[in-house]
Image 1 (cartoon, rainbow, N blue to C red):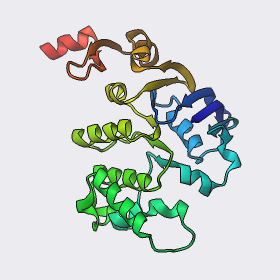
Image 2: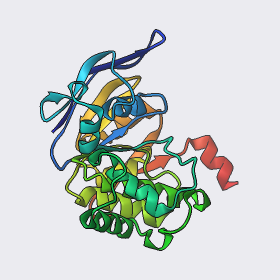
Image 3: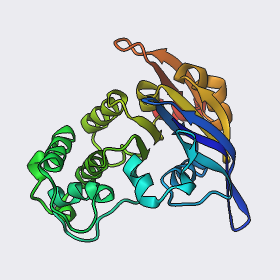
Length: 262
């Protein structure tokens, strides 16, 4: 169980997160949604300890993670951040192996089991063929999949992902989100695409100006009224003909529609 308890963040006198309260159950996928600047990334940074909250706490199985060592937290929480990048041209295989760092002391060689973990992560992310490539030669989408593989090799209990579908083509977006839904890990993921969030998330937490505007199942949160209040756009709800998932159609303003028709 991952819990955000009255989490608040202030920077230079500006409140970025205000008393955010959210629980993510074991094996649950919870999506953080909201407009730009609503506090999604800030909340995630507190969870993976890149940022210390000004108030409140992040709890893992009831224990404040601030009371744990950073290595201990890294063994249990893996993060994929928006600004993840590689400055050195390690091979894909080497970058993925770095996921074992929280579990090791010194420069020990990977065990046979750890090497098998790396191979499985490469396979899961469909990047086995890239194993000997330098990461600086990869496309943005390929590099994104490498970083997800590195996170999996940590063997975390919790995955924290900030816009993980950035740079991914449609096929790999769908495959990644299906994996998140089926992996059995506790997942907190920030997304912009409301329809992808509806398809993959058990619950959605909708942020507005650093506060929780709504939380519940996709059908409870992604209503036309709530979407208009938070994002300022009109939507029509439809049901996916195959999966039955709630999907949203965005309504263009009448004058824009008329302009396009001409």
